[in-house]
Every structure is written in structure tokens, then in C-alpha cells.
Image 1 (cartoon, one colour):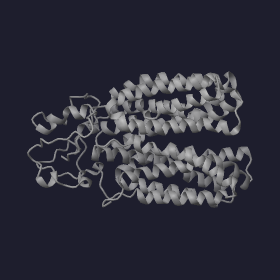
Image 2: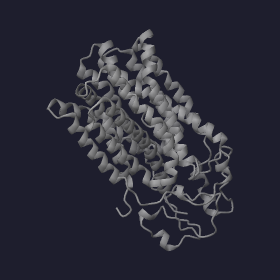
Image 3: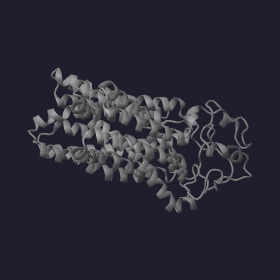
Length: 465
């Protein structure tokens, strides 16, 4: 590929990130024994991951605005170094220090990957979030048993971690992309970009909906196997299939949303996701049988799969290019709070009410997600960054501009049928631009004066302005 990067440059870091965390649970007991850690020491060391992840996520937004496409390969390389550091540690102090690096790099990857995906969508008009984020749960499902089998066959934890570090480093190389982001436009901030009080509220609400989804997700990941073992008497192998069934449903649901989601619409995807996610967890909480519980976890995964990618994609389309990395960073960080809060919240409630009852309560979070589908209405018209404007009132649209007039409906409603093309032009496109190769569509070849209040962005048909 002439410019490097591409979709593979997004899928590769998402996959390697999933490989590490998928195999991590299987590696923890071995590392605990090798480092002679007791439960308290292990718990304190593992707490270094979220402690480092949260500030790293907040800082990665401004970093991505400054470094653009270099951010993702940089933080992925840092994650490879962290993985290698865990492989060579020899004491609990160096173990905790390595986990600080792992946590910071892991949080940074989440933001950088989402910001890069949003920027790539803005440049090409292609829907990518579900495609990219489907790779992570699929990698986790495959990595967990693979690492367990490798340990069973006599491989050391150090050898496994070095192998994963090499794969992560390779994904960092694949993520290198020489193309510039629209975020690097040197023009001044528009008035809409400067007036962002209501936009901040909208982003916090959208992030809270994402946090609700991740609370439901982490509940299954952390407590699904325990529910099968304690409430249904499943063996260790069958119990481990609970989180695996959810992850498989998550990957399948995102691939399905990638295939058909554009025809459904963002709010409908979130609404249906909340309904199916809640029903799936309710079915699992009922604990009628092992089969019905596994089916419930899988249904919850399929339903919730497209919700967070859809929220992130809508955020990326709603804000202006200059503010996009920080908006993605904020939504990702607020969502991550739900992921962090699930284990202590569920554990505390389960001690008083029982795990099945708590799973039923968590299933009610699906109602919150359903209502949260309306939070997308709080986001501004696409690309304006101004919550005062709704669809059809975009101040960046000049009614006298034939291209903007023709494309206004497309920016307000992102459901163009696949394959639709714009053959009309606007009279300013040269024949060179219309015949340019696909990889160069992100370049701006528009004639006419620069409009600082109109961010350069492609329309839904992939024609560069």
C-alpha cells in the first residue's frame, strides 16, 4: 500500500490488543507462582492497570490532535514494550511497574484506535468502527484457550509473553500511516468549535450510555463463569464457555452491524442493542439450564455488540476535525468508568442478594441503553461541533453552494445505500480529481477560497471537496 496503514493498520492493533488481554487471565496464576505473590500483593499489582489507564486515556486525545496518524503506532509500540517488560520482571515491584506501563499503553490504544478510526471514516466516508472492533473479542476468544493449551504443554509464561510482544510490535508497524488527518488543518477554530459547553454535556451523556454497556459487558466477563459454576453446577470447562459465548456473540454482532448497520440507522442500532442485551442477560440470570444461560450470554453479546462502536462513530461524525480526538477521548474515558465499576459493584451486591439476582438487576441496564439511544439527538449536526444546530441547520452549509445543498441530507442522515455515487459534481472538480486513485481521496483539491468555518470533509459519496 502506497501510503501504509489502511484497514489492516486498524485491525492489527485491535487484534494484538485482544490477544494480550485474552491470554492474560490464563497467565496470571503462573506469574503469581513464579513471583511468589500472595493474593494481596497480586491485587495491588493488578490495580496498577486502571490507575495508569485513566489518565493515559485523557492525555491521548490532545496527543492525537498533535501527532495525528502517528499516535496509534506509537502507543502500540509502547504496549509491546510493556508486554516485554512483564515477561522479564523478577520481583513484585518490577511487576507492578511493568503493569503501570501496560495500563497506560492499553488505555492510550483504546483512545488512539478510536480516534484513528473516526478520522479514517471522515476521510473516506467508509463505515469502519464495527469492522475494527469485531477483531478484539474474536482475538480474545481464540487467545484464552490457546494460552491455556500452551501452558499445559509446558510453555513458560515468559515465552508466551515474548511471543505476544512480537505480535504487538508487528501490529504497530502495520499501523504506520503516512497520510495526514483532517485534524491537522492549520486553519483557526470556528465559532462552533469554541462554543462547546453544550457539546461537552452531550459527550458526557453519550459516554454514560457507553459506560452502561461496558458495565454489562464486564459483568459477564468477570462473573459469567462463576454464575455457571455456582448456580448451575457447571464444570470448569463449561463454566469458561460463558464469557466465551458472550465474546463470540460480540464479534458476530459487530460483523453483522458492519454488513447491515448502515441501512438501519444509529439510534435504531442502539435501541435494538439495549433490548437484546437486556433480554440476553435476563435469560442468563434465570439460570433455567446451562444451555439457556449460554444462549443468553451469546444473545447479550450479539445485541450489545454495535452499541459502543455506533456511539463512537456518531461522535466522530458530529464534531469538527479539530475537536474530534478530544471528543473521542472523553467518550472513551467515561465509558471505561463503567467497565472499571462493574467488578466491585457486582461483587458487593452479590454478597447481599446473590449473583443470579444481581445479574437480573444488571439486565435492567438494557432499559437505560434503550433510553440512551435518544442521546444521539443531543449531538450536533455532522461536522459542526455545535450542539445549537440540529440536522438541516448546519451553519457550515452555504445554501448557494450546489454541492452543499445537494449533500445536506446526506450529512444529516448517514444511511446512503451502498454503491450510490455522485456524478453531478460542482463545477470546480478537475478531471484529474475525478480520475484520481482511491487512495488519494483524502486530499483536498477544492478550488476557491478557504473557509475556516467549514472543515474540509468528504461527502458521503467519497468525493473530495
